[in-house]
Image (cartoon, helix red, strand yellow):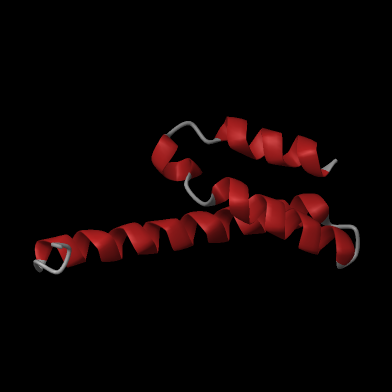
Amino acid sequence: MLAASVAALALLSTQAAEAKGCIKGAIVGGVAGHYAGHHGVLGAAAGCLYGRHRANEQERQQQQGQVNGQGRT
């Protein structure tokens, strides 16, 4: 069931940018949801949303660092 929900979430995501963080979050959320009362699909969906949010935040911070000149080595 968990594998099916992860596969469905991955297929629903059409753009690569949207998939960032979704799969990892869906796996963690699905497992946590399963053990917290057999709500694996709900946990996977919530984990996907949270993973996408975190990936977008990190990308935004990296872009701001490059604009400010902090991204140079």
